[in-house]
Length: 551
View (cartoon, rainbow, N blue to C red):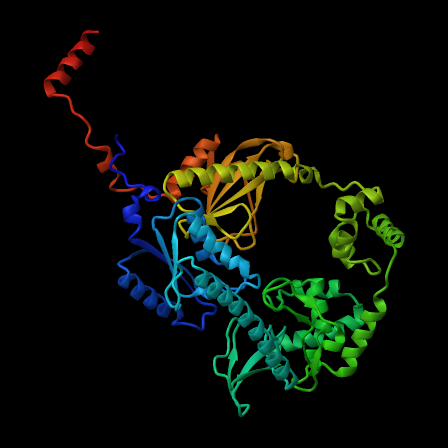
């Protein structure tokens, strides 16, 4: 009876649930700055008219309604409903299209069914019909869902046609400018407004975006790349030399063979703008379009490279491409192995006449298969790859245990949008990884552990299973914070672990308890439910003390 006064939100009385409501609001783009407020105002008026109290809000700001992915608000709503964590009996939505403009109209109907199956009534506050399950309501809702999907299809076609028309006029409809180029915002009289930064958009219909040369230093680098390629005819050599000079590519990362190749193939440097190489409609998979569908606007950009130089480089690249059989590829790789004494992706990329390392990996599956066909045994130990299924099982079990413990402590769990990652209470994330054992570079060096984190790891904590030698069994568990700015690979030895503040736990139970303490704040009113401790009279306590002393 100690917990009799604790109110569990998943077991509220029906009379209380009948007057509690949650709202779900969504806007498609960040330019609809008042959309959320307008929806909330209509929903609040509906709740007041029907004597409902809004206790929770789920929202997705700037998220398209075409896909469920990345819509954390709707995902959290469905998670709460399906896990019986919903503390409300009504769900208020502005209109039918707020579920989404899914191309499969049954998808939005399914999400409404999930709520109704859990006993939650769904109301559309701005619609002219009552969502009472009648035949009329069912027909109207289905028509509304079809109209929502058709609206997206028509809008996509109109936007695509507009982009093609402006591309023919020499404007840049979308995408990045490229290295040494900038996007310039101009008005209807072609007067410059400003140079746009990464992520900037135009908001006035009469304004347009053009491409022009940017930083003079980067322009000089582009000219050098073309001149240097005519000398060495190797993108890898050029990338290495650029990195030695401390220069970075347009993405801010180090230069690679692919990045140099992109510069050498970009017609923007001779004044041409090409659009519609690829197209991606309605958030589907991007497809490569045939050259006859490309839109080329010539002479709309101030050229950086002479046309003769550009087409000389293109001719070299086209003539260099030769389709090799597997036997010929292996023969050339064996010759490189004999000459170098070893074979690595770096050696393959910098050796003329060899397919690039990415092509080798795609063709042979992985480098282990390639090494086996060549009869080559590298010094690096790749046996850890065989243990990856074991790591995956360890991580899956740890995710299940952590999720169950956080839910039992009153936390709300949702998908973090990453593999083996959960978001707690819509805020911090817990990422579960494996800390792989790696021997020291020298026999006298101590081993270390490495954690490969997600590319876009959010703010939160990393819980890792630390593995023993050969990476097939569990040594212990570690927990470390992350602010989302850590390196992609986190390495630490046992000596540096304590210095870096990485907590260690011998058992999984200890790790789970630490995770719960960091994610779940204690309820300050919990002591009320337990009641005051019973106190024995002072005389009785003294009597007990005297008995112990005589013993």
